[in-house]
Image 1: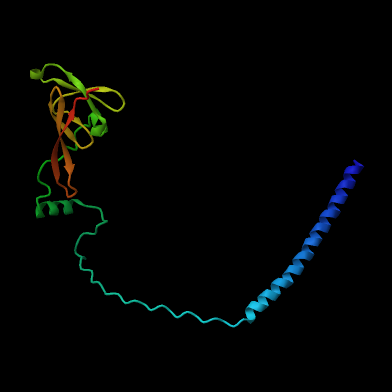
Image 2: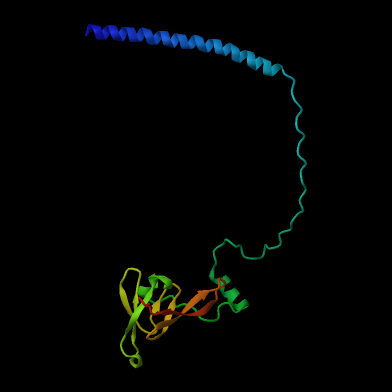
Length: 184
């Protein structure tokens, strides 16, 4: 116990001496720093770079004040006026109030036709496997794919359907597509 107290006392003395030596060392380097600062301040100032020349730009007169703001939400009046101004609202349209079918969750390129079931003249079922490995039965007028794809026909080697693709202006175009029988 006495040795521990002695050791602590010597540690305090050594630590105090170390701190004192560091403070003295900093005081010497500070005088060197003051000399360097005085030398830099005594140097003559260099030339100042001239200000850059300001370019003049042509003025632009904005003349689209009467048009709809591009980031404002679209309201029903704008849609009606654009439909009457051009033929944008005419043509095929997706049915929004119908209940979505199971195969409409998947993109068409992830679905595989694996066969048919039934006789061709009775309207056979198509067998389609989804990415989860589940096989679904489909008939004509069922929907599949994420672009409102309506099945138009089920054949032994393919399923034909029509997708509705938006042109971005409120019009829709029908695009025929088929899924061939997977030969695995």
